[in-house]
Image (cartoon, rainbow, N blue to C red; front, side, top):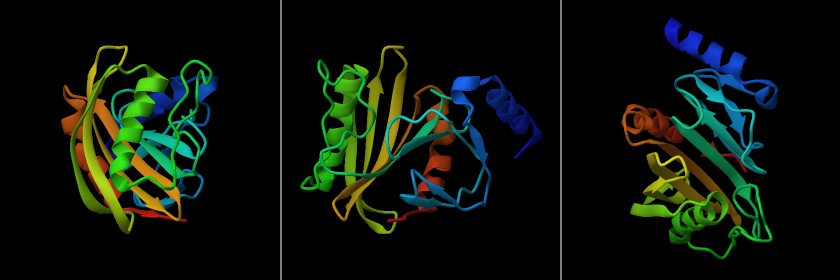
Length: 197
């Protein structure tokens, strides 16, 4: 990692505060178990693992900081569970994964989760195709959305259903600069990821 990137990473980690004390550097070429052991990953470059977790069985990695380029690993999500933590179950219940879903239902599950849980109003699934993911049959899809901050973001996801559980990895970044600058790093990481259980 170049010296300037190390300084930026150190600064991000130092300024993250007590709420994010669990942030840590995921070193290049160091195998790691991710999302509670759901994935085995060997990153080809260093990433920052954020201490804040979006839900049970999920974790977030970034290169440049939260909101700039984020990979979210959702691992071994059981049937009748949402993919991330519910904020207001009574008024805005999240959709739940079902082991009877098809691979083509995964992009819709993500979209509906964003709409219900994050209040995203503008969201489109732009492309979907079968693929191999983590050594299993899966789906790859592209999407775009705009959240409350009014920043237009693009995303790419890979998903699979294995032994009745959902495995999903997403990458999101602002359309301006960050998506194009980081998408290949994400794809390399996905290519070095296997489903661990």
